[in-house]
Image (tube, rainbow, N blue to C red; front, top):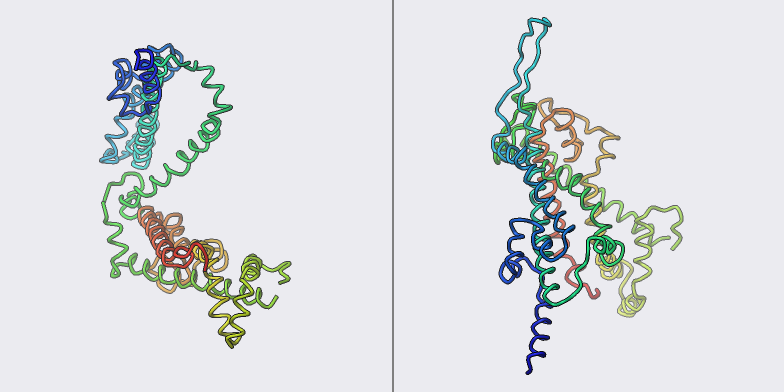
Length: 391
C-alpha cells in the first residue's frame, strides 16, 4: 500500500468516526477537550465562530443563573424554607403588616425547575462537545464545515424535525413534566390544611402513604372503601356497555345512530371468518356454543386493548359521578368522601375542598400505579399480546 492510499484510508477512518462525547474526550484534540469546559471553544478553533459564540453564551447564561439563584434554589430544596411570615404592628400606619417569609411551594417549584434546566443544559453540553468533535473530524478530512447560516437553513430541510419538535418539547417540559414531578413531590410533604402547613411545609417521606394504607385511620378506611367502589364502578360501567353493544351488534349490520361500541363490534363481527361458523355447524354446535367458543373469544382477542382503555377511562370518569351525584350520599360525617365518590372525585374534594394537597398527591400516584400495573398484567396475559399473529 502506497503512502497516498494510506493517507486516504486514514482520512476516511477519521471521517467515519462516530461523533460521541466519549470519542470526543478520548480521541479528540486539545481544543475539542477544552470544549468540555469552555463550550464552543472547539467550534471557534475550526472556523465556526458564530456557532461557538452561541454555545459560549448559553454556558455563561447558565452559570450566571446558577450563581444568582440556581444554587440557592437547590439548597432550599432540602428544607423547603424555615422563615415564617410575621405579623408586625406599624405605628405610623396604625395597622398590622406582614414580613416576607419563605413560601415552600415556590421553593419547591423553583428547585425542580432548576433541576430540569440543569438536565437541559447537560443535553446542550453533550451537543456542543459532539459538535466540536465533528468540526475537528471534518476539518482533518478536508470536508466542508457548515456556517451558522447554513445550519439555520438546514432547519428547513434536513433538520426540519428539530425545528418542528423543539416548541412541543418545551411546552411538554414546562406544562406536563414539571407539574407532574411537582405533584409527585407533594406526596412526600405535609403540604395540607392539617396543622396549617399551607405556606411552610416539610418533607415527611412515606408518612402519607402509610396513612392511606392504615385501615384504622379515617383517611385510610376512606381510601380502601373508595378504591373498592371505583373498581366495581369501572368494571360494570365498562362491561355493561360492551355487552349491550355486542348484543345490539349481533341483532342489528345497521348501526346509524347507535353508539361507538356498536359500530366497533359490528366491524369485528364482520371480520370473523365464516368458515369457523360453517365448521361449528357441521360439528353440531348450537347457537350458545358458537357464541362462547367462536364469537366471544374472537371479539375479546381484537378488543382487549379497547377494553383496557375504556376501563381506565371509567376509573377516571370524573364527569359522570360529579355531575350526577356529586359523590353523595355522605353516610360518615368524619369521612372526606361520599358513598359514590370515585378516586378521581375524592381527589378533587381532598385538594379543592379540604386542601389536603399531600394526601391528594398520594391518591393520584396510587391511582396511576394501580391502573398501570393492572393494565400491563391484563394485556400481557391476554391473547391479544400472546398471539399477535392471529387467533
